[in-house]
Length: 130
Ligand SMILES: [Fe+2]
Ligand SMILES: [Fe+2]
Image (tube, rainbow, N blue to C red):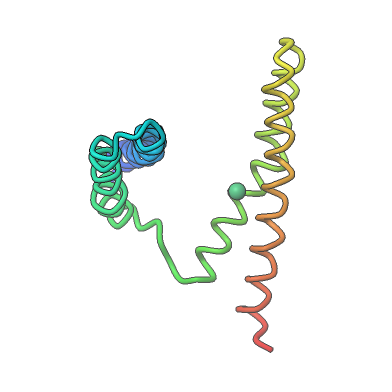
């Protein structure tokens, strides 16, 4: 795929993923307030963002591969979060006096580390069948 087009597809994927997640939280908030109709509306749009827009763009970008490819891609993402993104974000937040944010980033690192372990076990199971 042409490089600029690919860059735009990746940017669009990020936008669709964010919209999906945000609308799901909006739906949860509406449901909590007792407005099931608004909740269903947000859930419906969220589903379209993920199942149609994200999925169609992901298909064009070829982001889903074999199970082993997918585990390796996920491992790479989780590893980046554990090794650089969240530690750096936590450090920045702490130095800016944003203690609650720093603590949240640090807690997330621990969860991502668990995701990494789970993925490593899955990879072992697939690559070296019992
Ligand atoms: Fe969309
Ligand atoms: Fe994760």
